[in-house]
Amino acid sequence: MSERISREELVKIYNIEITFFDELVDNGLLNVETEDNVRYLIYEDLQVFEKFANWHYDLEVNLPGLEVIHHMLRKMDDLHQKNRDLMNKLSVIREKYEDI
Image 1: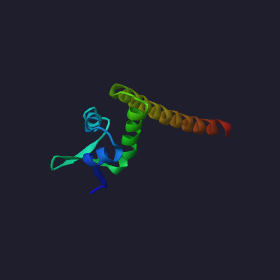
Image 2: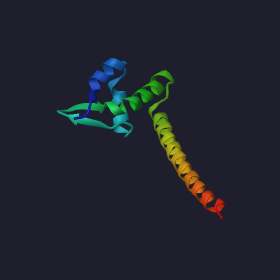
Image 3: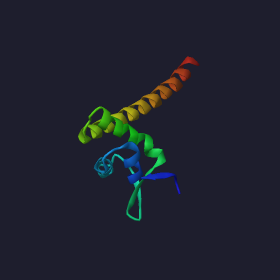
Image 4: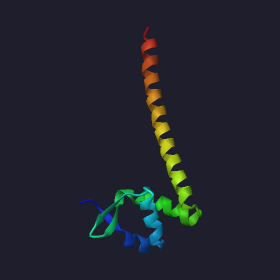
């Protein structure tokens, strides 16, 4: 079983509203495991949760704003990866033509 932390523990540690956590889950921004009606966040996703909590509580970004930011950052990551792939392909093509 992976390392995880319960929703209730997160609420206490980070001093957040339980509804905020539930809204993140309900809107697909966080993935959780549920066991015996207790929701758990996997430690690997803790950094994502902290980012959302900071944006929401420190920067006062509402839930729709969090969704937009999350979507845009994922899109940027995808575009960066595609750009790297294209640059690698271009390097291979350049090497072929330099040998001619």
